[in-house]
Image (tube, rainbow over all chains, first blue to last red; front, side, top):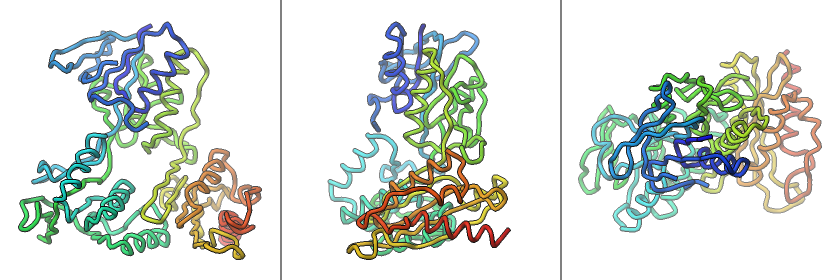
Length: 41
Length: 379
């Protein structure tokens, strides 16, 4: 299954990392318009 | 991770996202499940001069680094902060500590309209004590080149404030355009409407974080109060639902805390006005107690404001201001709101006591006892 995420900050990266941890077979793609991920974490 | 990639449209019928990459080339990618986590953006008024380089917002790491560089260059002697919310106040403190003279402006009369007037007066006193000038009723009409300063901030009546830096902190709005363009349902403040599993009105698309709404545990209604814990939790909920785990988020109580100089300001739930708006028969008390037992040196006043519903006796909200003991004490009433406790039940809580941390009757319990009495007298 292909899981696409728009936005790589708190909600987006929380979802990406937890989804991948719970199901390593998932294909997770994150689009982030800046060069910074999870800057507020 | 695809950094520097800007999503520009969601094609729901085709099940794909399109946008442009770092090289300017467009991309398209199909999805089985999509999460919109586009956050929120600072509101910047569309008025003359707001595109000047001295006018900044506080949102991203880059924004903060740019402000810091400007301060380190030594060219900032005076700053005007537009807005008087918590980001504005945190910036007022940060700039003052760097010897910048700060003036805060806002169009309306009240400092923090959601905060009880007595508590708001304490916050005002703290800002004024630290030489921050507060100009309520100052509606910025334009920002223009200054004489002897970088810019002049001018209001509708022609009053002018000199500034080397202008920080715009008048609020945020959800980045929901992608969702709206795709025809997804929006909620309050045009945030993306989601259910307790973070699903939007399209079953293949989730939304989470500052771009999405939430259910308020006190009103049961949709609300948009974008804060970090909810964003992280909503992200987890998406992952859980996607991977087949059971999840149903309770929602938010609007719990928030911030520091302004030596004061802690904390809130959870509804103010009296918000409670009345939501249809409750709201009443409230405001008390001041000591942050430590009277036998213990170094205590300071802790103001507590509690809101209850006369009809049902239910606790609806709490607010606190003090030099110590406000920030984490708010978590007790926050949990009580999740548990839909009455003021009487909350007043029966076995709260912690030792002299360095508070009186034997915790300030929250003192307030609860007074609110119980008031609700009885008024009903």
